[in-house]
Amino acid sequence: MQRHNFSAGPCVLPQEVLQKASQALLDFDNGLSLIEISHRSKAFVDVMEQARALALELLGLEGKGYKALFLQGGASTQFLMVAQNLLEKKAAYLNTGTWSDKAIKEARIFDDITEVASSKSANFNYIPKGFDIPEDHDYFHLTSNNTIFGTQIKNFPKSPIPLVCDMSSDIFSRTLDFSQFDLIYAGAQKNMGPAGTTLVVVKEDILGKVSRKIPSMLDYKVHIDKSSMFNTPPVFAVYTSMLTLQWLKDLGGIAAIEKENEKKSRLMYSEIDLNPLFKGFAAKEDRSDMNATFTLTNDDLKDTFDTMWKEAGINGLNGHRSVGGYRASMYNALSLDSVKVLVEVMSELESKA
Ligand SMILES: *Cc1c(COP(=O)(O)O)cnc(C)c1O
Image 1 (tube, rainbow, N blue to C red):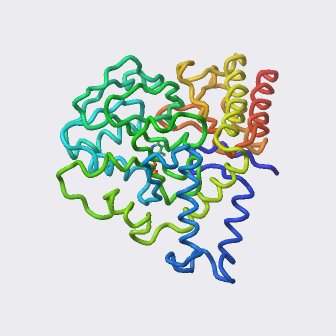
Image 2 (spheres, rainbow, N blue to C red):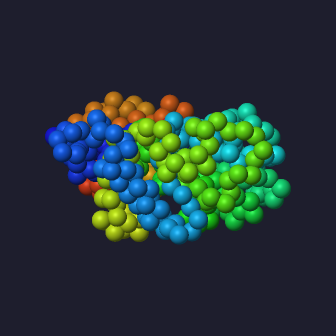
Image 3 (spheres, rainbow, N blue to C red):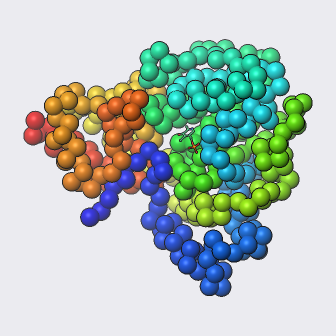
């Protein structure tokens, strides 16, 4: 049976990427597996360099003073690394959900944090707007897409201070002027590859301004100096991410995938809005093109609906425990056909009820 993987993360990857990645486990370099050769071999150094170059190329950041790194420790380690490397006196944060909240918690270990706005009291169902970004702070941090709540920032504020963005769940999904950001980070497992590596894209000139000592593994400058090979990198995660970035480039880059992503989210949200059995969770103007969150209007239909979507080959549709209901994650590698299958199940439920 064909599977339709709506999982929020780790998520669906392109079939051709999975095939090439599995082949590389068996024979990558003259009969040796990708995971049993030296990471200093030319074959792997080429992979790392290609992955770093592709990331900058797809984001339109080549030759603009940025460096791309593939680090370990997940996006969660970036919550602390950002503060450790950039926070001297004070930093400003926008709180739009669980992940922002966690980023704020880690940064507070280092120094004073100003929460410029928060939608916590509304269980994060919208993106706060119209706040001021304090000019005397070291940087402003935001989360572009709130994976759990299904909200997404559509218009980024102009920031008078360095702008730092957690793009874990929507990087490479839509065209943006990425040069408005000074540091972007993203755990690979949402839209780029398997868990185990985190992409960091940083503008070099914002570094080196804090007075504290930074442990080597947590110092962006160390990783830049060592071309993202300070220690043994997670070779399989980097290789698979590289294959996904190559797949995206061959498709026509971010502009091409954005069109597909818009078709998917339009179809999904029109069903949520038109079908009286369903109700969207997030404020309409802030709805995420990546994660659609919704509930049934009548809980008595839950068992029937759950059976129906599982029988249709759908996977990963249950909502996060802090929101409940359902979450359809529509990352780059999820096809429009998969969304059509889900929408058909939803309308079939309406005709049955
Ligand atoms: C999943 C997620 C994280 C956490 O990523 P890890 O790699 O598991 O640490 C952080 N931010 C956002 C927006 C996420 O979706």
